[in-house]
Image (spheres, rainbow over the protein chains, first blue to last red):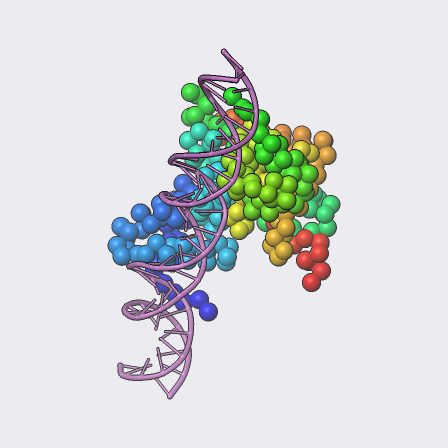
Length: 131
Length: 131
DNA sequence: TTTATTTTGATAATGATTATCATTATTATA
DNA sequence: TATAATAATGATAATCATTATCAAAATAAA
């Protein structure tokens, strides 16, 4: 049974708003401004819950700290090896289904049932490659 | 300057041999049989080094623990949501270049410089979907 | 062989995440 | 509406993978 909480609402709203793939700590710093006595454990609990019910995505980065993503568009991720920011690369509908089909075919080769995908690219972002 | 060590040699050999994407702990348990007094810090140090020089790959799984992969073939990963094993899905040369080209095009849309990719799929493996 | 340098193993420190638990907030019911 | 039942919170302790430290051992160079 899911019970309403203002904390969960504010956490979800913040993640959906932001495009910088925040860590729990980043969310904590930000949300303290709205709910000064919010506990960091509450944020851990809720991002975990929100991932489970598919409202946000968890992404694993090079530094090993989880980041959270509320972008609902079809997209893949690009992490810069230098500044370690994560960029969303939007997929057009056509591209997205094309990639999904290719991946589905690959999954068929091991007779598995395909559910989710996470494509993480890395290299140098536009800014960092100019140095 | 890289100095030889038997430990590093044995660690690399074990990772290249295995196809089960071992964690550091799994490697530790195994390698103790060959080098009984090996320290777990030595394994951490060396897998990290071997990743940096591109001899093996590090993969991040759902449980947050790093696993290591010495498979040199072009492949992507599939993690079973039930048994949490990780399967390699081999890419034929043609497929591999096709995917790389598609990803290259996507990276171009954000003007970044493409270096590496990691495609992680998930769902149910052949065995687990039969239950 | 001697010296310089790197690696090792043991272990302490770190840091992100999870577990615990009394208190508080939300929902259901009388 | 008041009360009981249940779930969520905040504080903090516990966990656990990984990293840092450092004296001793191994390797390479002189």
